[in-house]
Length: 44
Image 1 (tube, helix red, strand yellow):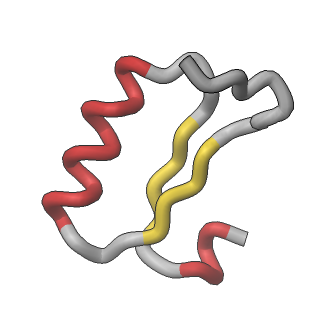
Image 2: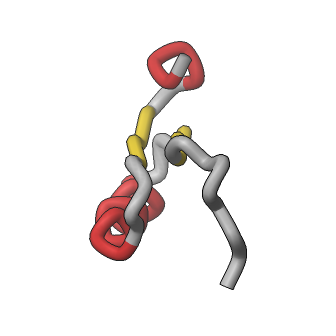
Image 3: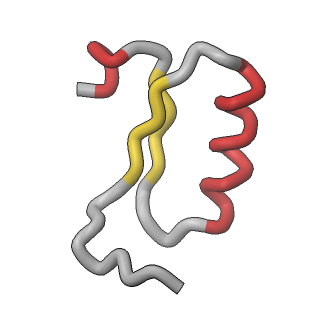
């Protein structure tokens, strides 16, 4: 397994509904915060 101690969280930018749904499922398996945004401006 990869060591992610320095990682604060994940940000995903996508307008694809399937990608957004997949990220919401992956959130269940992560111990770091994960947010999905539809634009880069909203992610920043």
